[in-house]
Amino acid sequence: MNRLDRYIIRVLLSSTLLVLLVLLALNVFFALVGELDSAGQGNYSYVDIFIYVACSLPRMTYEIFPAAVLIGGLLGLGNLAAQQELTAMRAAGVSVLRIAGAAVQAGLLMIVFSVFVGEVLMPFSAEYAQKMRLSEQNKQVSAGRSGVWMRDGNRFVNVRVIHNDGLLEFVSVMEFDDQSKLHRMLNAHKAQTNKNNNTWVFSGVTQTRFVGDRVEKTSLDTFEYVDFINPDFLRVASLDPRYMSALALWRYVQYQETNHLDSGRYRLAFWLKWALPFSVLAMLLMALPFAFGSTRSGNAGRLLLLGVLVGLSFYILMQMTAHLAQIYNMSPFWSAFGPVGLVLGIALWRLRTVR
Image (spheres, rainbow, N blue to C red):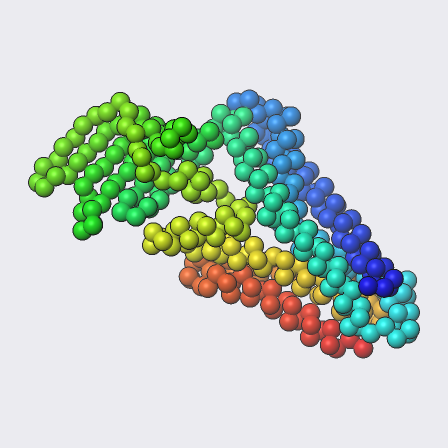
């Protein structure tokens, strides 16, 4: 890496950082405005609002980073074009491929940053923000009218309410035998893990056994369940898959498929996690043809605006394919990488036309 490469990398990183900070400031402002109506619910104070928004910064950064890379690349390279530095580089014999190579090196650094945010910072901070907000508002996680449904072998579990401390409310367990016949049903008001022996303690239990033609129904104050659902899977089921790490998503996909459950939503989120780093590189390469075009046309503003519109179109396309994948049962892999491959192909094709 020579001085020219370092200079281009520095320009791209600094311009991307500037755009990222501006976009984050806008997101923080709108997030604060949106949370003000929630102030006063339970113990949710203005200080808690600022903490919640601060914990949401990694999530915001991860979501807007590809757009920040595109706009930052357009501004950085556009500034080089406006000052005739790109023209001087070309006149000195520096090829488009050489400049693109420096941009790719900058893109690799940006990818490392985005992966760190998405895999380390965001999963922890997003879960903490959700738990803190619900706790201060004296609320709990509820998964809609039917609650959270899970399967573990021949056992089906339904949980209506999951508290932040791991307490479960309104728990139903249906156990089937090897012939797929229901042989026992448990309904409990509450369930809590016993950390001393890794079991679950059910409270306020109604146990129903189906023995031949008879139905035996008993009431128990407490019931110790030795082999119940892994608490981590219950926690994952209540989280938004977009904010989970790739490792957690993959483990949950394996769990669902082992139990013959539909894993499409989580598999799509997993592949979107892998597609985002490539989208960062695609956005950066897409900025290059627009910057070279601005050196020739003299109307840099129009070209930069066109580049921003391309970025918005890419975002809309990603959202559309993600929703269509779930509606029409499309391949999660191609739904995630299709738009990225399209933009990357267009960027490389346009770079070949630059003279």
